[in-house]
Length: 313
Length: 283
Image (cartoon, rainbow over all chains, first blue to last red):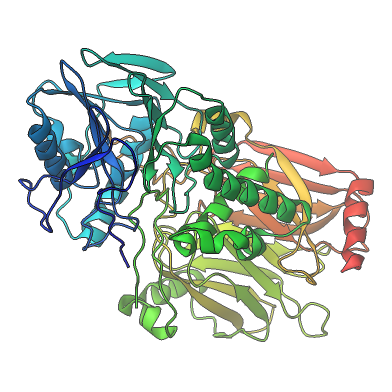
């Protein structure tokens, strides 16, 4: 059952709920966004798989407003969601969208890109994004058609203007954003966005809160990335790819790190003890089950991914 | 009743539909109930040789619902092993609705203790997976299992292909069992990208050329354990569990061949192989 979390008062502090979406799906209806810090706006997607009820609105997406222009960070699972995000932006500012930044290639984060192709907008992603997206595009579009019930077509897939191999800075006028590409973790093209002005770290799907993480990259790589993130002391606000934003980076990373650590421990043990994949699927990290949404849907896959990765280490 | 999960946040390579419990028949797509695909295959591969129910001869373990369509573990258990009935000489693995359904063929030699094998396959769409056994009798024996999974063959290549090529041909031999209490069997792991040739980049129309393991021969000493040929239905980094005769002496040697005519050889010296085999008595 899809659970809606309207972005109202979910986080504490300076957060303001500026617009609330009514049930409706037209492009004119602004997406509900919250201003988590001055100029930082986030829409929280439903903690569910994409379906006809949530219309593909399942990821956290948003934008950052600078004195010159706006950067969009992820665009949602359909162009309609992208257009509703654009409507929300237009309510807050008349400045143009100069960048669309995609945190990785998964469809719930990028299929709204189409809504931003007009104008001077530059699309930015991490190195590896285009290979990963273009090889999966047809299955993503088929899946959107099947599960959301929309007419998906190839125009939804937008080639990035720029892919970042390591780190880059983009300027929005009075604020600059630091974009960092990471090693293979959730996917092979994870990109994080940091706004030094407000201390906001946009983690994309490197962080799942409440919803079970899913591995489409490397379990070991992901744990390495989390270890490096834990050392950061310049972060005041954290925006996960799924689940409520917050302010305490260490605390927010905790459950995901625990899940991935348990998964690695148990799958390694299954391999060392001479058990096959099906045994590992039935036994690894089962104690995590009650702590996560969508556990039954994604955990068995995670075990399979972990097993085939770890058996060669 | 389908409670569909997927589109994907994190939907990876292959799509999997999550289905709730329901009767076997209702989960079989109507187009598969008549087994039309199989009827054509049957004529093509087995002519008019009689095929009878093989559930007393072989068991096929496969998931009803595959977690990852590109890595579907299957186990074929030889029920004729240690009996005085005619033993299994050949096995065929058929995945009806895969692009190339005849997925693998295994011939067993004198150093095979049984025809029990395990591997991991790609499943491209909901399909029957079936195994046929030839015991040298008039009829072939067949068992089948319906697997719900999709996208395994056209799923994007899991790892960077150029990276995967660096390790191509590396092999490991280890012991695995399915559950506590089960006998452990030898498992051969082969590093190979096993590219299907169906993994097309939809936007650039670039297709990664097919590059997959097409033959595996395993010997113990001079004696043949098994000789297998296969298509890209085997998963990336193919895995093959087999059952070598304990009494047979000599090293385990493996030769792997791929469709680009690469050959990879590896031999595990008797002490290693022997040590591995002695564990078998533990369970």
